[in-house]
Length: 270
Length: 355
Image (tube, rainbow over all chains, first blue to last red; front, top):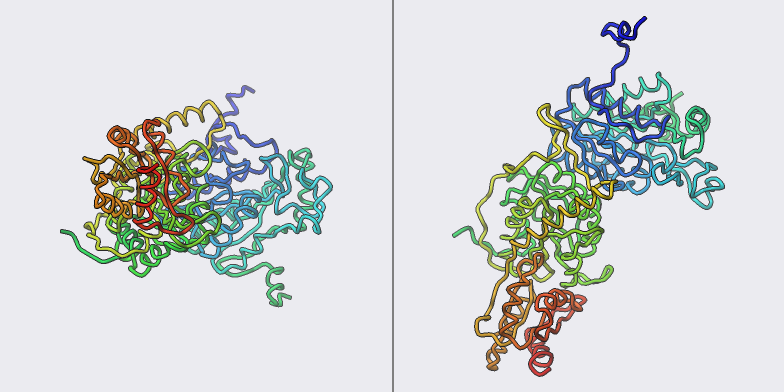
C-alpha cells in the first residue's frame, strides 16, 4: 500500500490545531508543557475565541509560549502574570485572558500576585504547571518540591527543618471567595489529557459567563530536572507527586467539593 | 479661559488624568502622593469617564497591571513616591524594553531607604539615567507648579505614545502637597486613536499574532533592538523643553528644576536687589536634558550654581553640558529639608561669586 492511499481525509484520526504554530517546541521530550499548550489551544479553537483571547507567558520554561501559541501574547516579569492579566482584563472585560505559569513563578516569587488576583475574583483563567522544580534554570528547589526530593539546591533532599515545607497553593486559592473553579489535573495519559481539556473548557466557559477566577493546576513531570527518562519520570510522578498533590476538582461553581478541604473546614462529608 | 480651581498638586494630577482621557490608573498608597488614588476614587473617575481605577496589592502589582493594560494600547498610568518607584523599576525596565507607552508619576520624598516623607529631589539619577536594569531612558518632565502637574499629564501621554516609551513626571513633595490655582483643560475623549498595529487585543484573521515581550535570546538580535532603542532616545532629544528666567543680561546662572526652581526664582530676585545679575535656567524636560541652551548660556556667565534638593545629582549633567568651560558648583539641602531662597543666595555668593 502506498502512503498516498493512507493520507486521506477519511483516515484522519488526529490533526494539530491551527492555533499551535509549526515552530519546534523548545521543551524536553516527554515534558508536559507541549500537551498542555495543545489542550488550551484546542479549547480556544473549539470555542472560536482566538480573536478575543490574550495569553500571558511567564518567566520559566514556558517563557517562549508565544512562539508556539498562535494568539496575541504578553510576556510578563517573573511572578507578575496575574497582575499583567488583571491590567488587560480590567481594561478589556469582554476579552478572554489567561496566564500560564510554573510553580516557581506562581507559588514563590508571584505568591502575592496569585493570592490577590484570586481573591479579587478577576474573571480570568490561570493555568499552573507544577513539576516540583525550577526547570529552566537547571533544576533548583521549587516551593512545590516534595519533602526529601532532590534538586540542585537541595542535593541531599528537601529537609523541612532547613528548607521549609512544600506549598499547596491550589488548596489555598480554593478557599478564597474570588475563585469559581479550582482543580488539579495531569497530562501524562490520554485519559488525564481528556480530563484536563474538559477542565480548561469549563474554565474558559466560566470566564465567558463572568463567574470569577478559574485556576487549573497541572501536575507535570520534569524528566530533565528530575534526571529520569520520560517514562520513569511519569511513574515517579504517579507514585510520589500524586499522593501529595491529589488530582481532582477542589471547587466547582464557587462551591468547595474537595473532601480534604471540607474536613479542614469542619464539614462532615461521610 | 478654562475652569479655575484651587487644588493640591496631587489632586491636579488626578483630575488631569480623568480629563486627559486616561483609560486606567493602578496604584498603591504611599506618602506624599496618596491623594492621587484618593481623588480618583472620591471623584468616581470610573463613572465620569469609565476609566478603570484599581488599588493594587503592591507597587509591583500596580506597575505590572500598567504593563498589561499598556500592552493593549490603553492610556494607562500609575503614581508613587520614591521607595514605591524603586519597587516599580523592574516593571519600568520591562516596559522600556517592550516599548510600551505609559505615564509614571514620582512625587519624590527623602531617602535612601524608607527615608522620610518630606520633599526631596534625590531621585534624579534614577529617573534620568534609566532606573532599572539595562540601557534605557524615560521621557522625564519636571513640573514646578500645580498648573504644570495638570498640563504635563496630557503632555506626558502624548509624548509616551509618540515614542512608544514610558514617560515620567518627576515631581516632589512640595509640588504634590502645595495648593495653587490651576486652570484645568477641557475633558478629552477616552477614544484611542493611535496606531494599533502592535497591540495585543486578540489575533484577528487579517493579521499575524502580536507579541509584547522584552526577551530576545539571540544576543545579536538583542543588540539590534538596543540600537533601535538608542536611536529612539536620540530622536526624543527633539522634545527638549526649558524656561529662561532673567537670563538675557545674566553674568551668573542658576540651574534648577521643580520646587528648587521656584525657590531659585526668589534667590535670583534677591541677588538682583544686591546688583548681581543672575539668571535661572529651568529644565522642564530632564530627559532630554537642555544641554545646548545651557552651553549657549554658559558662554555669557562667570559661574553656574546647580541647585537641587540632593547631594548633587543634576550637576553631573550641567557639567557635561558646559564642557568645563565655566565653574559649576552644587548647592542643596537634602534628606527631606527644603532650602530657603536666602540659603541659596548665601551659597551662591560663597561658591560662585566669591569662590
